[in-house]
Image (cartoon, rainbow, N blue to C red; front, side):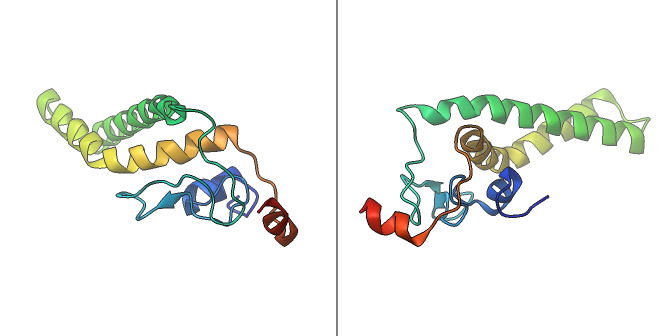
Length: 128
């Protein structure tokens, strides 16, 4: 499931969606930015200006997933919890998970549009 060549490998290892060898982010995962291009296969990570604005839809979906997960878990584990306490827990979870969902949404978005193609050494020398 997490083998090289799958979208999940690229997402969870923060690797280039095209060759899955180069790093997708420059800097650390949560403080870094999306690299301009892959340092292994030279694939440009942005198809057009504003390309990653579409990742906001993925961020929204991740926020909804966090909301539902925390709400169901809290309701099952603590069925007598009041609504204000439940709302506070849900909002806190969403705020704490924001950096993670922001980072994750960009690489998920890129994996919608870039597809895996194994990188060969001949490609990198002929492209330069």
